[in-house]
Image (cartoon, rainbow, N blue to C red):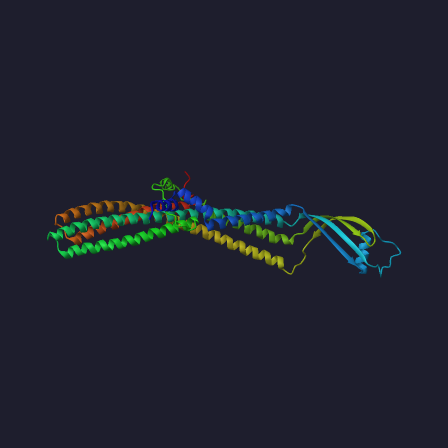
Length: 436
């Protein structure tokens, strides 16, 4: 391939394949902006705020304007148009007024003076619903932050597993090379050499699976962030400061948990709906005023008029419909209160589970650290003894396998401890990743 064409290909391809480095702070911010769950939660908040605006309209006057043109010879409609146009005369034949047209324009203003408390209750319910939606958004953000941390730690663990298995492959390859030299010198049985070569092949197979797992973990990380698959490599910050900022909470109080506060807001909304249902037993008082203008071309006359007043409506008997709505809303309130009690009990259990899970993860991490040190020292001694011919190949394979497994467990334990701490913070209603 000509050098110029190769250089052009490199210029075009390498920028597209350049890995993008992600910190947890940036990843969480991207997920909150682009993840479909976060966007859906924001849409629900917008919908709840729209309900508040609708409820607030009860305290504003209602203005309507209408207009229509009619042409008729109906005695009743024609006579009414003639009166509105100020065109009446005593020579008019009421039975045959003739063809009369009319252009009417009317403006009406209405204002509710009293609605039996239903308007206030509706506004309170809408505000409580908006508060619940905002808390649901906060809860969704917390859950999404945990998922981002989980995906990042899974990716970090998968790639660490690849590196660990690669080191195992290198160690087995060096051991096989040494064993082959000893076999050629007549110092090792062929069965031992074949055993080491089989173990090397199995470790390479394990490496292939680890690499595929790392590739899948990278795709899952992009999915959580709401990124479209574009084939661009993903890299994580080596020593992420967000993980270093994580600290064990010094409280077990979960009263700030957004899910709990959200269900309590829904209880207030249900209480307001009970009051709104009871308001149907009370009268409704409305003030109104209207102005209208009528123009007729058949009579060549026009006129205007106005009307104002107060209307009082009282539902004396509706066949038990209001009583049924009150009963229904009261039952719904009782149901929501039980959901709130269930949520409190469930969150209390979740906090205890998260606390115990973190304690277990921290203990496993401590144990795995010691296990890696012990396995590394044992493997080093086994290699030295094998090189001197004082150790069987099967024993060396066992030592190398124990070291590889110990390193993998240590990598997983480290990720589990950080994730368990993030889960504990979310369970208590704290930000899963504290701000810098």
